[in-house]
Length: 475
Ligand SMILES: Cc1cc2nc3c(=O)[nH]c(=O)nc-3n(C[C@H](O)[C@H](O)[C@H](O)COP(=O)(O)OP(=O)(O)OC[C@H]3O[C@@H](n4cnc5c(N)ncnc54)[C@H](O)[C@@H]3O)c2cc1C
Image 1: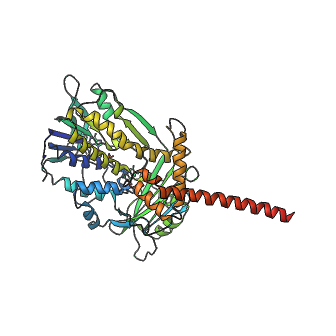
Image 2: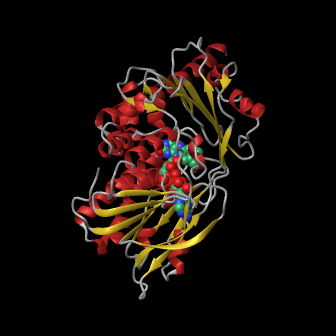
Image 3: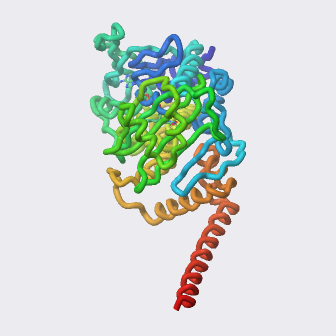
């Protein structure tokens, strides 16, 4: 299956076979005669399973609706395969309890559906689909260690790799792989800036914002006699006062994935008692009460992500010909809004547009400029939330007046979720990137915000009048 309809080049090489690499390879297969994915790790063979190269894959992963739609376009029928594999279908308004900084969001039948499953089942299904493409080869146990350049050092012409002999052996054999286009999809640990410097280019500037957040999660068997009027729970952090959050979602095989996250010095550990204690200390007992009698199905997996990092490839004065980067290798952020895979998918779609409209020589500059725009909104969403944490590092300056105004407006909307389903539904659509943030400012939503402000100010006036009246009568 799959042969380049209009070959732009002979060979494209993708570094990294996680979600960005897999989706990108799918796009490239329409434009290149041959696509090769180079992955340092090995993919599971027998059944879906976590793998070392993607250490975050044991943690809860939400696939936003926009990401799911893009993946369904790229792999028709994928959604049905996920459901067949046991993914839970949740009505986000009716089935999920959401405690936000202002209280519990009102539950309602929203019609807004999300699928809940383990991260590695998604990778498994997508990998399986890609394996059916004749012009995509997936090479495992191969470390990319550098980039090849032409003699004039004006273009990237391939990748330098080291192949591992056996599963436990160190990578040894050095090989060169020529390519018309090299894509860096090697995630947060990407060494591309160093590789580019080694062939005479500048490294991109970086913005790094950290909060020392740590994540722990574990799968539990859902007890057969468990009863509740919800299927999932999301207890949101409310920084700076409350810096921990907890989640419980049903996934395939009749299990829950339960996660807790907190900043240092309270970062969760692998210790069983500490994990339960962290769940017990969440501001609602929902999750603790559900899991305390449930049987754990896995050990506790922890992950301490290094923080938000944005690499500004678009600012390079000399763009490396024949090379582009996307996914976490360029923009990686706190997973609070579950945006990573969807942003990777948006990057893949952008690449498709650029390949349709741009000559290969112009691709890096055009792609990196446009990718910066795609990354901008999710980056602001994630980092403006992180900016509220007391131990945040890397903020260049305090929030500007427009940023403060947007933060204030978002707080008004989140507060309205406790009583206004219409607002919650618009927020779902924006958080899931189905609608742009402009939808938050539509007249009916603005009206709700104004009404809320008027009610609040009139109730303040009434209570002041009551206080003065009672002081008069008591005199
Ligand atoms: C705790 C946590 C929770 C998250 N939750 C969500 C969520 O709910 N929803 C969501 O959408 N996203 C979430 N994310 C983000 C999501 O995991 C990533 O955005 C997603 O995996 C896409 O990343 P990627 O493919 O660009 O990089 P990665 O997933 O990091 O993959 C990089 C790949 O490159 C390979 N590689 C690296 N170096 C080399 C090399 N030199 N040679 C060959 N191969 C190499 C690695 O083995 C790996 O396979 C979360 C992230 C974290 C840390």
